[in-house]
Image (cartoon, rainbow, N blue to C red; front, top):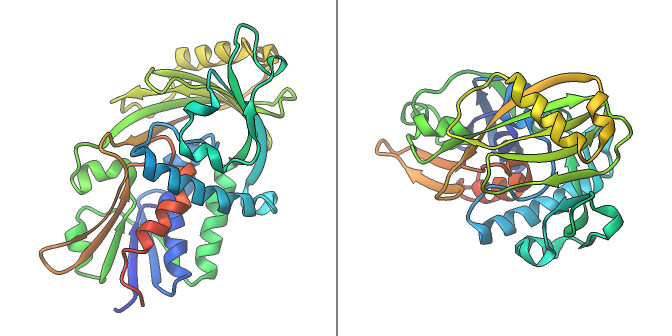
Length: 319
C-alpha cells in the first residue's frame, strides 16, 4: 500500500492536488461524488484574482505560485483552457490589492477611457482567464498520463476511508462541512448567466468583497459569462429568474449590447468559504491513518489551486 493515496473531491483543488501527487510518484485515485463537469469549479468564471479567501499572506504566496503555472499553460490555450486576457477591475487601486499584485508584470492604474462612465478608479491587468470545463478535462488527462485515475463514489467517513490506504487527501470544498465535520465552512452562492458574446474581448469586474452581489463580464470561448452574486449561507442550487435578469441588467450598464445578447444558459455554484482561512493541514487519525486537508478556498479556488496543491502534496510522506 506504500505510496497509495485517495484524493476525495474532483474539482480543481482535488484534480490539481492529485496531479501533483501522481507526478511525485504516488499511486493516486480521485474519488468524487460528481463528475468534474458538475462541480462548483466547472461553474467558476475562471479569472485569476484572489476573492473571498483568507489568510491574505499565505493566499498571496499560493496565488503567485499558481500564476506562474497558468502563465506557462497559456502557451497552449486550446489544450489547457488558459489564456492571458486584459481587463479592468473597477473601483480598485493597485496599492490596495495585496502583496500578490507585485507579481503581475502587466498591472497599472486604469486610464480614464478604460473605465466605465461614472467611475474614476480602477486597475488594468493582464491575468489568466481559465475556461474551467476545458481545464478540468485537461487536468484529468494529465493525471491519467501520470498513472492516476478518477472513480465515482461518495465518501461518508474519512476515518473509514483511511483504513484502506495510507493517505487520504480531503479536497471536498463545501462537503468538508459535514465530512470533517467543519461547521465553519459555509456556502456563498454565486449565480451567473451565459450569453452569446457581442464582441467583448476584455474582462471587467466591479466586485464588492462584502456585499451580496457583484458585476463581472468574462469572455470565454463560445460565450460571455455574466455575474454575479455572493449570497452567504444560501444553499439554493437552482438559478433564480429575477436574479438572472438583474445580472444581465447590471452588466448592460457597462456594455449595452449585453442586454439583447442571446442567453445560452444559467449556472449556480456554492463557494466554500471558511472565515478561519484555507485549511492545509495533516491530521493523524486515531486508527493510524493520515488525512491531509486542502479545503476552504472560498471564491478563489482556481486562483490558488497549484500553490495549495503543492503545499498539500508536501504533507504526504514521500514514496
